[in-house]
Image (tube, rainbow, N blue to C red):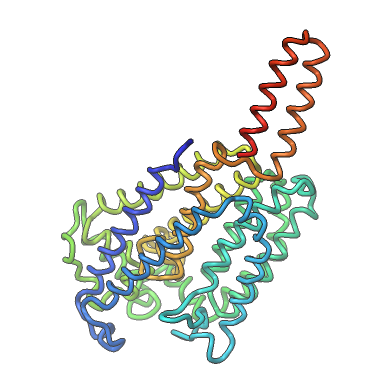
Length: 409
């Protein structure tokens, strides 16, 4: 029996453990900002360790799920994620912070439904693109999942969470592109998308972010402050960094140092070498995910492995780009590393699914493929029987029976 991909699990564990270390480093010194939130030296660290514990339960639970089960309940999961998105606007259930409504109250913490939406969309797309009715040369086949994506984007932008909406767009279009849909279909979306993006970008706080991205020094104490402090953190680290716990930017200089900009603190404390090692770990995770996908014979398994790999790696790529000033600032945590329970739980579940897929082909042919395999083997048996002696027919019959017995296990 083929075992799960140990390298994939190893990389996920290393990233998660390193993330816990960096969260302690970035929150162990109680700044005035953290003091206002009632934080102590270990409060963020203890909460994150608890989330890691729950995350490994999610990983194990996802690993135990058969791909056929995941496929069967892809649509209900998508509907549940939409319901949770709507619940953030319900008084008493939704939680507001910083002028945004992105969380629902779940004891003992909160949950961000937009993280679940990405996972649900990946599973739904994997099922949709593996259906016989899906055609890569059909615009109708292409536009249906895009319209579903738009419904979710409307709810996400209302929160507002422009970063999550754009992540969902990149993820959906990337999966459709890799399925082989015509490039002109994706290009066609630019016609209605460009005016919508312009309108959203003209919102005052988004417009300030764009201006600060183009020229942070134009407003160094306002919209450009966070990006400038990120540059200072990365530049201060040099080649080898100032050492674990030695960051100065975490002392109320760099906002969100333990969440969206934790990569900058890594750069300051571990230098260029540390940041390159983190990037290398995510690259290994992505390569392992693609390698798993390439081994899949079942279309659903293939698209699911591709989608899960993209979901993690695209978010990491955007986080790197934000911290280094390559794209406008947006709130996206670094998977496995940043403080943020919702992201960690969803990504741990994604790793669990990838681990199951890494051994799925060798241990459990999908139910929808089993009948096809039986029919194909039966046809070969009949054709062989027409042109071979009786004693060879008997040998083939025994081999065929043994094959069916193996498939049924």
